[in-house]
Image 1 (cartoon, rainbow, N blue to C red):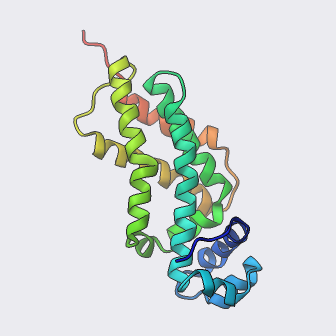
Image 2 (image 1 turned 135 degrees about the vertical axis):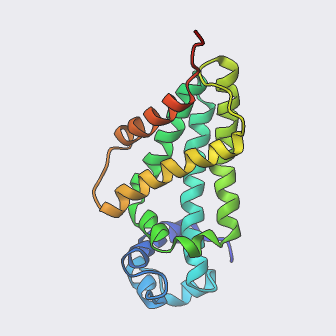
Length: 196
């Protein structure tokens, strides 16, 4: 795949809608061209086919999540406060791209087989969350977890499913309120407990 100019990348987000509505296999390149306003020939210049477009959309979403998560993970505060910030940041990004989220859930199996997506998830979320967990254990705001990698995956899963749930319902949602619910569960499970 060739580097995609930002003007095309911005328009391409509209291509997620037909994939979300009808599924990957039922969506034609002509439809993607029509909804995005990008000529079909131009799409084929940058992408070998629909699978590369789906991979691009999901990677773009994860790149945006990575940026927001990195800012939240590096913010001042305790590990617990930064964990809340990370969850809120991911949900905020997901709320701005509901069609891409719907396309992800509509074809989760295909998206999961794209190696770049798995690598992007690790870079975007797992690594910074593992660091926040370690720093939270060090500052006393979170308890030390046995397996930080598995814990970061569980957190990503909880946040992602929450964001996807709201996206599938098609209703706008308040990322801050949704994050409050998710982090309430996470923090209650991760907060350091006093021994008596």
